[in-house]
Length: 449
Ligand code: UDX
Image (tube, rainbow, N blue to C red; front, top):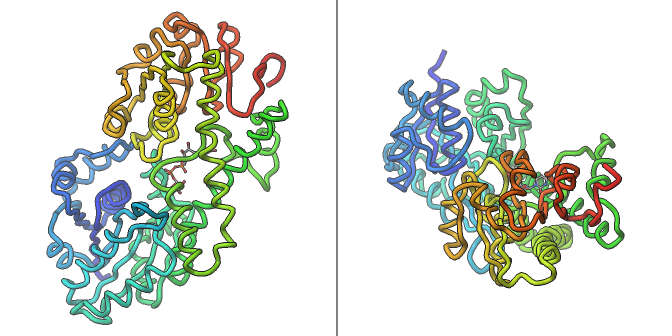
């Protein structure tokens, strides 16, 4: 049997670090490369530069096998790998909705000009459709390897908080390839997953690129759909939680990503739907995805509505009101505050004159870097102590399981806004709390469930 392909991973952010650790865990020799020496130093000594359940211990375990190594040098990467996964970020450009491709272009360029023999460059980053074709031409032009250096696209669908599981047991693998050899190489690299029954879709690179943005657009649309229904419920005096529950029993609709609340944020969904619209415009098909603008707007409106609810509970005036903001991360089990609805609401409350104290079990440090003006507590008890209104912004288990009676002893007023429809309304009411939630009538829970 020929030796297993050697793998490099370029970019050790969230996606790349997970990819490198999981590939080494599967038994491959892996070299992970990043231009940031701080990140490389941390990872090489077994420390994750971000919070991700399970990945920290897997990093330490795979380092101990000797199969996982780190470097800041592209020469090492070019010399080492048969298959190079490019996992660098594609942030939103400043001043436009388009994706900023400078890191992707740089990574492919740095590899291409150093690689001299047969190898496969595999893009995993989320990019505008057409990027792979453009990069393939660029790489062929600049590489001493010429046609022996091929390019493929293999989008990644991992969710923060489930990164290891989503990488080792993905719903599907998508191979965007232009040759039988490229497909063979990818099948070799992913053989352990395919053997476990993970389905593979083999496609052209453009389709592979589109699968990712289409999936994220669908998920964002589903969330905004239920949040649009929440707006209607608010006007009609109906209850969106019961509406969502009833819809979820229809197998064709399903209950996942149908949770009403403060909406989506993070480093992917918001920027990806915006970049998709920008790309569709370039392609002359903007009308096909105009609805994504509405999806974005519905999502953003939930933030101001949450502020409205806090203001209503504070008798119409936020100036000087002490608010306990529970959560800063864009979702639980993450320390990521990029485009976090939670932090945005905390900021809006602060701008209206409220005295806001934020507490997040993992994201306080990142939140403080983003918004140093807000106050941060180091525990739930400290955050709610003396609060006039408590607002749940990220549904961490610690918040959802908190005892309303224990919390009630600490606050100045038992008034809570449930921005994630995550709390047990009956318990809160029984403990004498005034409870308000997005998309639910003020008297929710009094008679129904
Ligand atoms: C997402 C995609 O799920 C993943 O496939 C892709 O690779 C990257 O983007 P992630 O950003 O980690 O993953 O978060 P996800 O779990 O999808 O949640 C996105 C946001 O939607 C969060 O802010 C979450 O709070 C919100 N959400 C999710 C809802 O508001 N309601 C829901 O029903 C589900």
